[in-house]
Length: 69
Picture (cartoon, rainbow, N blue to C red):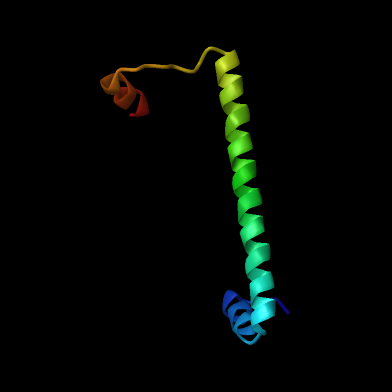
């Protein structure tokens, strides 16, 4: 039987405070790890773009805004 999000939340609310804190810590670490992976992936993509001379740099705010469009 597959649990729904509501079922999971209901079960969590019935846990002890210590168990809830453990779940909170696990989720926070998981989110940090996922974000770290996203940043690393972005870094690798930027590194490839730099190697292919696809990155553009400018100190001119107007040019930067146009690059974002």
